[in-house]
Length: 238
Ligand SMILES: Nc1ncnc2c1ncn2[C@@H]1O[C@H](COP(=O)(O)OP(=O)(O)O)[C@@H](O)[C@H]1O
Ligand SMILES: [Mg+2]
Image (tube, rainbow, N blue to C red; front, top):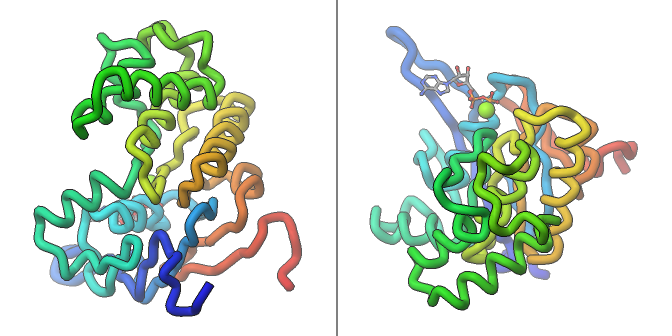
């Protein structure tokens, strides 16, 4: 692997997020750089208000940084047209939010098929892939349950399967288990980590829970506008 890093799935290069506030500006963070290798599972840890969601929105090409550059597989977002950027977001990035937004009238399998059908896959191929992902998420016995017939943890498992349905290079998860009780959260987290490892997807997972962060390859800590590399959680720095 060269330093030039053709194998980086996601890079943020000296990005800043500023918001207008009265007559001045609020600087949430500035000069933040990070790189995720293909298949790496990284925690983004920080207290509420630290800027985790802002950073993920930027990484997911939902918002342009105030300064700096976002690169997805080496492509610099600022050099793309709106159309190219939208396509890159759709093809290369999967999102998981705290609240699930599953389609209530469709069962689990159909919810995971939907983004694949929108992307132009055949019904049969989408169904095969949705079944495979849901089985990996431990939902083999829940394929034709609608969201209302699933527990909160099961719903988030469907959401994670759906986010991976079109094989994104990068999964961005914003406090994906924030609405769940600690035991359910830990189970869903473990399933998320296992499936992204199986699929080879890079993942950046925001959480304020250090115990959950410790399950990942390494943790980045966002605090007072700085990003610190916390290394492998639970071990002392080399
Ligand atoms: N659209 C916005 N306009 C102004 N301030 C914002 C906006 N979005 C977020 N902020 C502020 O930016 C800071 C970081 O927010 P956020 O990224 O949501 O943090 P976290 O996800 O870590 O809780 C907070 O102080 C928040 O109030
Ligand atoms: Mg947030």
